[in-house]
Image (cartoon, rainbow, N blue to C red; front, side, top):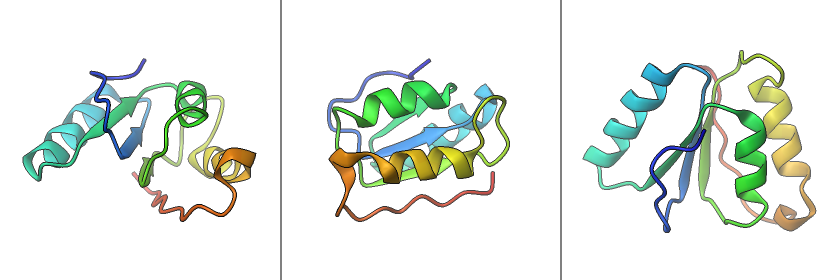
Length: 91
């Protein structure tokens, strides 16, 4: 489920572990970086269909859809072809 909605969120964090989401949201907020968090990769894909983001931090091992698969799905979206993608993985 997405975290608190931030209209100008430019960084998305996707992880099935709520403690990781909370920690990264806090870290990003301390640097004045707006972030949107998702514990469901499919909700992230729905979000990026209508919102432009600058970066995504993706968990590699999630049930149902891995971070690598999620990154491929996001980059493959027609709406985002030609955009710069910065999707580090490895949490």
